[in-house]
Length: 310
Image (cartoon, rainbow, N blue to C red; front, top):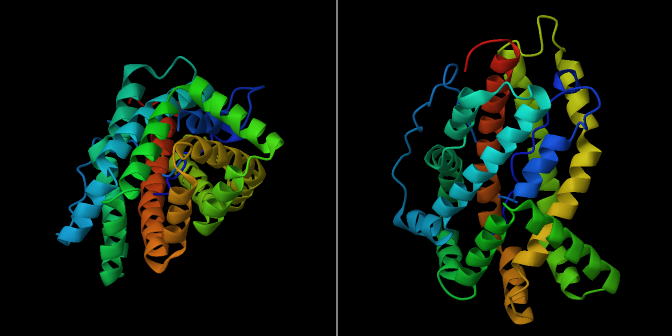
C-alpha cells in the first residue's frame, strides 16, 4: 500500500535558534521513514482513544492484511526521533523526561491507529463492494509480499545511514537510466503521492502553528492568521523537494525485490477503481492522524516555550 511520509511539521522561524535550518526537524523526520502522532501530559494528558463504531469483517480483515498495527509501531519510533529534533531546534536541552513522555504519549501506536481507523473506516464504508477486491489483492501474493516489503523498508529507514544510502542508490540509478525507476514513477503518479503528501505536510505544518498559538508558545504578540499561512506556504518548495526524493528512494528500496511482473500487477491494481478507493481511504486516515498529532505536538512545544511544565 502507498505509505505517507512521517510527521513533516516544521518549527516557525521565531521559535528556532539563530543560524539553524528552517527545515531541519522535517528532514530528521523524513530520514526516519513514508505514508504512510503525540499527547501532552498536562494539556492533553494521554487522551483516551476515540471510540470506533463496529466495522464490517472485511474492513477488519483488510486492516490486518495491511499490517496497520506494525506500521504504527514503526511510526511511534519515528515520532521519538522527531521529538528529539524538535527539542534540539526549539528548546535545546530543556525538554527532559517530561518532553519525552509527551512525545511517547502523542505517538502511542494504539492512539494513532484509533484516529486513523475512524477516518479510514468511514471512507471504506462508502465504497461497499470495492473492499472485497482490495482484500483479495492484499491477502494473496504478491499483495502480501508488497505489504511486508514496504513495512520492512520503512523500519529500515529508522536507521539514518540506511535512508541516506537508499537516497544515494536512487540517485545512482537515475544517472544510469535504470528502467525500474520509470515504473516506480508511474506508481507514484497513479497514487498521487507527491501532491497528496505535499498537501498533507502543509496542513500538518499549519496545525503545528495552531498548536503553538493555542498555548501562547509564540508569545503574547504572536503572528496573525495571514502570517501563519504565509509562513506555511513559504515552506512548500523545500517540502516538495524532500518529499520527491524521499518517496522515490523509499519505493526504489522497498520494491527492489519485486519482479517486473509483480510490480506491473501492483501498478495495474493501483490504477483500478478499488485501488484508487483504497488510496483515498488511506490518505483520509493518515491526514487525520498527522493533523491531530501535529497540533498536539505544537501544543506540547508551546507549553515548553511558554514556561509551563510538561
